[in-house]
Image (cartoon, rainbow, N blue to C red; front, side):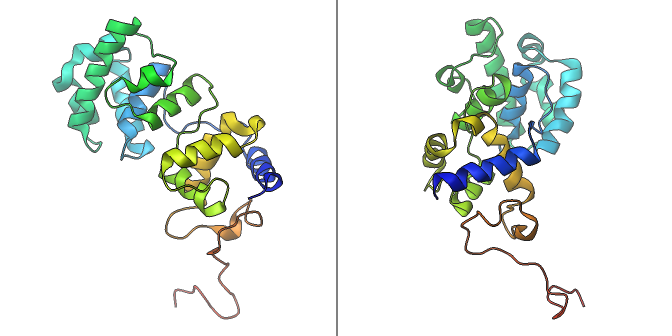
Amino acid sequence: MNPIKRQEIFRRLRESNPEPKSELEYRTPFELLVAVILSAQATDKSVNLATRELFKHAKTPAEILALGVNGLEPYIKRIGLYRTKAKNIIETCRLLIKDYRGEVPRTRDELEKLPGVGRKTANVVLNVAFGEPTIAVDTHIFRVANRTGIAPGKDPLQVEQRLLKFVPEEFRKHAHHWLILHGRYVCVARKPKCPGCIIRDLCEFKGKTKEPSAVSGEGSAV
């Protein structure tokens, strides 16, 4: 994909949503960190339902550490892998207090040393909490980057590296949100909603879906 086309894609995404926000609910970098750890293989909706109750009772590393694993589990048991996540969060709280005075570190290397925090989670925290121009490649972004031709790659790391290389600097801060929301609501996995896509004419995906034909009755349920 040529640079002019990429520029126009992100210009349109920005125009449609100038200040994109995470759909995870949080008030502090620590709350975001907990929410992102919980979001692995879970929906933002299920995470928000859990953290709304959790953060009413415990919202700092010290308060959550005081719950212990057994006290934390009831708040997050609606979420997949909740037992492992509870252990990771409790240990993360312990390390934050021990090594970082209860504050969330602001480098990827430090974040990745925390239990349950991989490169994707670290990138989300750096981007959303601290405004760093990082791009966390999840399944949605991986799909959109490859389908559209914006930054095709064989694995998430390669896609991330190519996005950081190819996305114009003026769009890099919000690129993560624009791409994930586009993948979540428009360029969906099974049947992308190409007819209503604002970048349809720029996308290089060969399998674009079409509007049902009113004349032929294509797509009719009868």
